[in-house]
Length: 368
Ligand SMILES: CC(=O)N[C@H]1[C@@H](OP(=O)(O)OP(=O)(O)OC[C@H]2O[C@@H](n3ccc(=O)[nH]c3=O)[C@H](O)[C@@H]2O)O[C@H](CO)[C@H](O)[C@@H]1O
Ligand SMILES: [Mn+2]
Image (cartoon, helix red, strand yellow):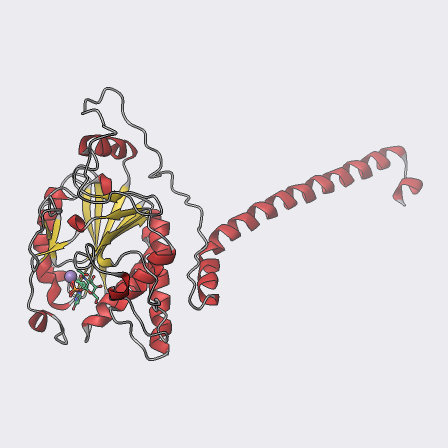
């Protein structure tokens, strides 16, 4: 309309204004697209939860893209390293070193510590280790930390996240360079089951609140153990789980101590199953560990609302998760042995071992 009524200079003014409005609209469009993408990124974990909830017995977790710059897949080795030539004909023949989904099953003799440490030190990941020391379990912290400083990822950056109800009982243990402790308060427990389930809950909450921006790789470990031998970068993968020492050799899958009651969300039918994994040592990319702990937390909450507790608590939910979300590395029981058991010939080194303990005395409500 204005074009017909106005003088030439006003027409140019009108045109310029019109183009400016167009540019502004275009800029706004681009900005909104970007923030939609950001929102999708942020919502990713909520979608994960939705995907998990809608499947009663099938575990399907949508993967969030890992925004961390560090990646296990980047196998860059420094130049000039001297090490033994790898051999295609010689290796361990007494044990199987690969799963049927074609990921490594890690035993002593299947990796060169020199090579694997050199590769991963180049990427300098920020490693977090979550340990819980609630009630009398604070007594295990000293031995765990002292031996971990000797054998666990030496030379790497490590933060121990200690969840405890008694900060004053955390011992002063000298830590190596780039290694530190973060204390996270949690409530005391009346039942030990609260603590082992609670690990999944507090891990989920703490990743959301704090750890996501300060850790690339996360381990979750029992505290009642000592390290005796190297536990190094060979354990790194997107998701690494450890075979339970009690069931790794001859146990038929029907005899795995999976949850067998269909009423529980941890139910695994007879006839299914790969291995039985321990809940006492686990590791992976932060986001992959987040998906796992959040899954175990939410599934056990659903069980609780149906008045059922899985037979081996969070370990049962973990085994279900790992059956349908295969780990990208399986670690042999070298990565968690127990002082209760004799060490057989196929376990060439015990890297970490669970201490004997008086269950009745150490747990708030006794126990097995
Ligand atoms: C070797 C192995 O497979 N261990 C698992 C096994 O029992 P464990 O007998 O090894 O369980 P546990 O008593 O060591 O408890 C697991 C962990 O929870 C923490 N804790 C526990 C109780 C407590 O009062 N305060 C406290 O801090 C502590 O970090 C401990 O190491 O079964 C548990 C659940 O049934 C967990 O799945 C363990 O990972
Ligand atoms: Mn334990």
